[in-house]
Image: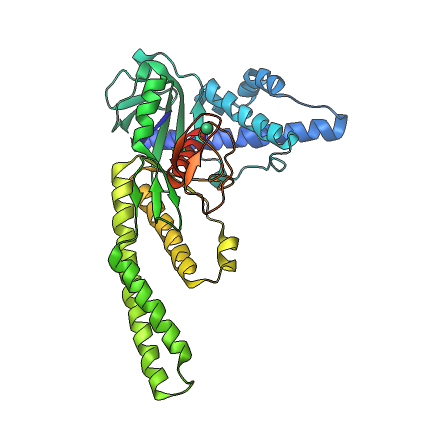
Length: 360
Ligand SMILES: [Zn+2]
């Protein structure tokens, strides 16, 4: 698992970090150019191993690269190779040159000894950068750190510390993470087996609004009564919208406060637009707003927010087996592993499972 902490570098350290990014980016682009030239001119394929072997000679030619840890440089070349491999497998487009705003992190793939890297509490030692202040708001086991990644954001620096954890620890982490499934039957189902329902006052208000809207459509066009009814509907509409927003703020606030990772599925916008039923369209708008609130609240509090592909989240079991069910079937029953549970709760758990598979 990965812990993300805020870094508080000194101005000098920040300068070194920015320089590291810039040098890594240039190396990446040079290495890409080298691959292309070799292929175009000689039909030769340059591999990661070949480029890595050339690093010492490269450093001699460009001494400024001596200021970057060799592991970090190797990782830069590895990224390029990964990009090419993804392209060869048909998973991604052809690798592009990186601009400064697209090369925003560097990685120490094998951090040094614990005694050195985490010798000073509240600090992390980054080779060639220095001992950088780090706000480690959660404990982690420094002996099991497998990778350190430094990332530049618009107004801050973060460090992602990957730690090898036991299954027991992983399970504990999953508790502070939550998957959320939004649906028509309940407003949202959570992977911790709780549900969030639309409050009764809101359901009532929405029903009243619907009735008023129907009445309005039956009134004579251009009549005085119609004008009056129209005003009433507009007022009711505004009131319901306000109440709904308030409800969404409260729910999203609570969920973000209680969890470190919040996972939702990507909403299929196209399907939603197609559905013209009023009840449905109201909930669609609500879900989208809910997800927007969750996202920005999570970011503001330094929590992780993940959106996973929605494909099959309601038709798959946690064990991976397909469990097809129509909308009317409310209980998930897996023949493969025997799991029997509310379908929305299972979906929420599947969403969380998918999010935990995504590297931070
Ligand atoms: Zn199963």
